[in-house]
Image (cartoon, rainbow, N blue to C red; front, side, top):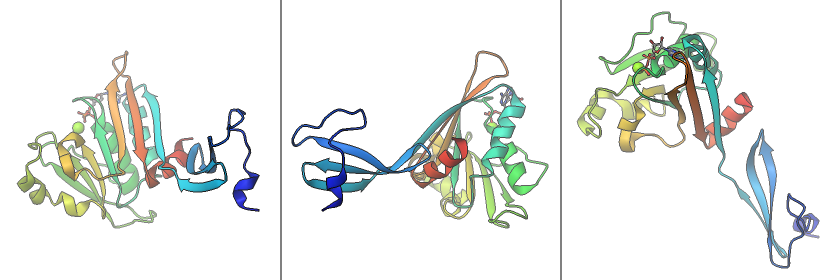
Length: 213
Ligand SMILES: Nc1ncnc2c1ncn2[C@@H]1O[C@H](COP(=O)(O)OP(=O)(O)O)[C@@H](O)[C@H]1O
Ligand SMILES: [Mg+2]
């Protein structure tokens, strides 16, 4: 008897399938993310992968909480990842980046890269990526889509080898890597409140779901 014969004739809501109707069943689930689903159309049964996505929202009631969110992210980021931090001036991108870099590198002094465009650090002792580079990039002063400036920065080479943390990622244009982790910060009702919209997809979504959920 083929596997599909054991599939129920009801969907997840208990509705009875009509002849020829599709039944979709999430087979493999990690956290709340389905990794594959089985589709049955009459006697034809197909299992196909589902592209994982993750999104969450956090309210951060002061700079310390934003910094702490950055420090917590140290547990789920590694060399080869790209973390995009977007939001208006003063939204808290650098505060979050500083918390993350301090946790990963052990460095106390994390200057803003607003004028230098890039500051580099290294993963510290005890981390599996010890010695590999961490790039903190602020593209606020960079002209959008100016290829010569990208080449000068060496950003294309850093993607895939270093952990790259990018402020103003909108200016990356076509250089923005697929499957990056995205955090968008906005101002809350109170002066010291920020809202973080956290999103990612693909392999990183699985990692982040395990962590946040
Ligand atoms: N919840 C918060 N999270 C982060 N920063 C906050 C928060 N509340 C107030 N602030 C203040 O807002 C400013 C954020 O600055 P910064 O991180 O440099 O912004 P950005 O890099 O987004 O331009 C800091 O002066 C910080 O003290
Ligand atoms: Mg900044």
